View (cartoon, rainbow, N blue to C red):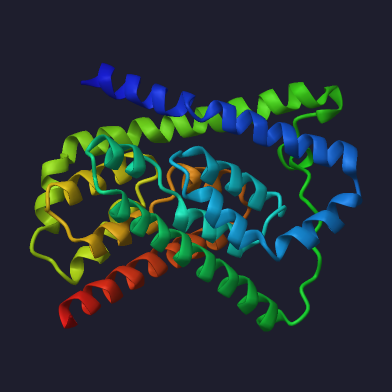
Amino acid sequence: MIHDILLDAMIDSIKLLPFLFITYLIMEYIEHKTKNKTKEIVTKAGKYGPFIGSALGIFPQCGFSVVATNLYAARVITLGTLIAVYLSTSDEMLPIFLSESVPIPTILMILGIKFAVGMVAGFGIDLFIRWKYKKIEEEKIIDICQKEHCHCEHGIIKSTVKHTLNVFLFILLVTIVINLVIHLIGEETISNILQGQPILGPVIAGVIGLIPNCASSVILTQMYLENVISLATLISGLLVGAGVGLVVLFKMNKGIKQNIKIVMLLYSIGVIVGIAMELIEIVL
């Protein structure tokens, strides 16, 4: 059992290495080469961030939420863009659906809902922040080298490798713990909890979605295919599910209270959308 848990955790974590390396390499290049030009670029691109983030997030992979989290921690993207990515991220849902020959219209509908919710929520959050603070002070991109004291003067590649390995080991340890907990509880137990809960389903599914790895999307998708949960409950859990991006958020983003608020915001949006869909289905 322990061998399988360690092996699965290692495989899941290794899949993220290319995303981590490329992200830190780009960020190091921005910090060392572009200097003040970055502010202007980020300011112009930030307005369309939620749309771009939602579009990229629906592709079936766990890595983009990690990329977006690192970019947000460095204040390259806005909070609205980060939430848009989290909400639209699909993880393992699409490959499972395709392997089970789920009708294409059903797949497109689910992806469309995730894209739309992510985009609308992202733009809404950014607009609310601008309205609340009226004039947002421009935040400079945080120098991750100074933040982690890694002596980046030795070169971009060396610094990138250090950042990548640092976060990789953190993700690996967390994934091992999560896989162990899931094994002890059992997917069948989780499924039994969700049965016969038309309104509480989205609430519980949202909690499952908070599991910070791809296991949550696998559990939810399989339960939907087996008619254990409704479409609304599935959507709720998938919206909340942001993969290991949440792990990286607490590792890289400064401020534990802010990170908790981001998680609660993500959870609230996913659950509210799921409950609304359940109520609409009941009325119809």
